[in-house]
Length: 136
Length: 232
Image (cartoon, rainbow over all chains, first blue to last red; front, side):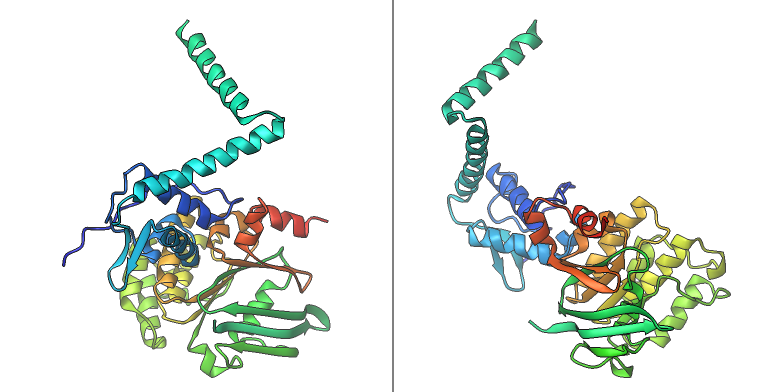
């Protein structure tokens, strides 16, 4: 069996004040959710991804382990790590990202003492307002 | 997990001036650890004790389960901050010598590193810049298959782009074998993504021993934590 060359990650800038493995897992999850990383795509080896992102191999191992636990990646001994082939992988990745985005909105709403619906409505109005301002 | 480096209440004084006091630490095999602190904190002395160059005056050291000595020298590679490479040799001649000096030398790694770090082999070591001497020292460390790698200020004299290239090469060469790396530096910002864990050395004692992720989970970078630990 011949393997395709593994997918090359874009040059991600990582924030040093947040856990690096979480950021790497999140970026890969987004790629899967957006179908830029289709089912069955081979990921770089731990060592290659660590070298290209300039992080420790343990960091990449932890990111891969988290994504495996979520069922988004699967590792086959001697072959490497792949985007899981089971159906619904994209949907699952999207659901997780949506939940994180929602939690963020809820936190902001709580900070402001607003209801989530009101915050979203205000945000939509503001964006509409910006577009009006730009078109004039 | 197996401990690659263990120190148990290690103490050291130089001409009656205390340098290290009750240093206890444990580094797992395959970990990449930063030994951080300002100049004069005792980082170099601790690396030299682990490398077997200096003997501790108190306490015990174990490298791969053994006291530092001729046996552990085979498994330990040290990049000294101020190396003394023979200046009359060219870079290529030095590597030819090193191949015979070190039984664990990998010519494949050497070739890869020389290409990546863009070193010219035909120049005498005496004419190299500070950064080029650091590169020769790094290649001498990383081309060996030593399980424990000790680096003292690995970015001395190297520009930002060169640092990125070296960081990649370091991860690649060490990740392959699951090597244990201990890096002493005060250059935290550039190196912090390469640390699984950090030891803060303050006036000869370990002021804090934390995983980088535990620091980041509090919304701090290792550089900010460094400032917290060392600002008066």
